[in-house]
Image (tube, rainbow, N blue to C red; front, side):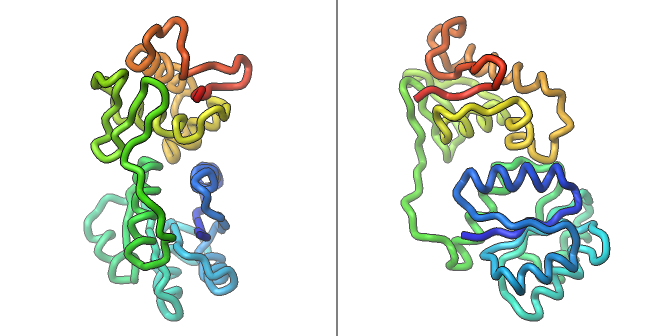
Length: 226
């Protein structure tokens, strides 16, 4: 599945592209509304993630232009929270609307939902549980368990452990985790990653001082050992 991501914030585009590619999507990118229209015509993507405030042509105008020749699913991104702006986005032809800052996992969920509704998604069984060793994630309820006992995770802690468990044995730097998990909130203090890893070990490892799964690759980053 091919997804077009268009935003003039280069770091945000980098984070979204990294995350979606990690999910197996092919990702193409642009930085303004004119480029968005051209890339839809030339590349025929399966879905567009489109920022509203961009140079040369804003996202709503680009959305309307795309609607003149395509029914491709479109998700608009905006820093505005006004309901009227959301209604305008739908009037211009958007299928969904996400306000910055957003959770990257929410964006992925909305992409999957739109692809299913449009009939473009591949028919794959949906996994509702992710389990490695003594750690199990209930992906629907967003609950985590250690040896069957519920662990009280925050929303962001769940995001981090889900991402690492979906990509076992792969090492991620702090910067990569910030770009991926925090996405638009990439300006967060890099020490935030260390704090979340420490808390996850305390809540999910049998012995946090000698973790078996949530490990450090010294000088590189963190990974989940399968």
